[in-house]
Image 1 (cartoon, rainbow, N blue to C red):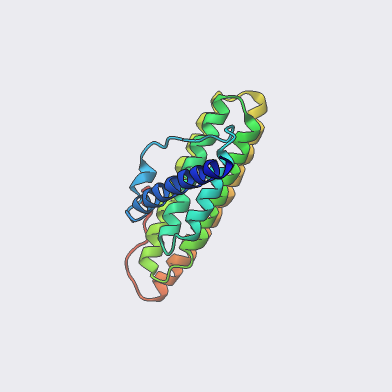
Image 2 (image 1 turned 90 degrees about the vertical axis):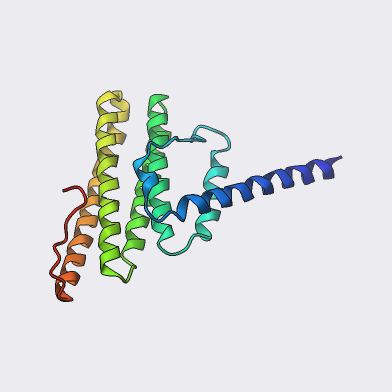
Length: 196
C-alpha cells in the first residue's frame, strides 16, 4: 500500500514537472519580453507551505535555461517576486514581503550580469534598456506600496527602494560602458533609452 502511494505521488509530481517545463519553455522562448508588460499574478505565495517547492522547481528550470532566455527568465521571475511581495504586504506579512523583494533584487542582478555577457553590443544595449525599464517600474510600484504600508513595513520597503537604486546605478554604469563600446566601434547611432 505504501509503495503504491509513493508511486502515485512520484507520478503526480513527474506529471506536474513536465507541464511546468513545457510552460516555462513557452514563456521564455518568446524572446520579446512581452510578459514583463503584463500584470503578474503572484501564484503560490511565500506564506504557503508549498512555496519552497516552487522555488526549488524554479531552480531546476533555471538549470535548463540557456543563453538570452536566462535574462528574460530572471526578469519575469523578478516581476513575479514583486507581485508576491505586494500580496504579502497586503496580508501584513512584512518579513515575507521583504524576502520576496530581496529575491526580486537578486533576479534583477542576475539578469544584468547575464546581459553583460552578450557579445552583440546592439542586443546588449536593447536588453539593458529593458532591464532598466523594468527596474524603474519596480521602483514606482515600491513607492506606491510604501504610501499605503504601515510603519513597520515602510522600513523594509525603504530598504528595497535603496537596493533598487543601487541596482539602477549599476545598470546605468553598464549602460555607459556599452555607449563607449558603441562609440569605439565607430557606430554613429545614439544610444537612447526606451523610456525617452
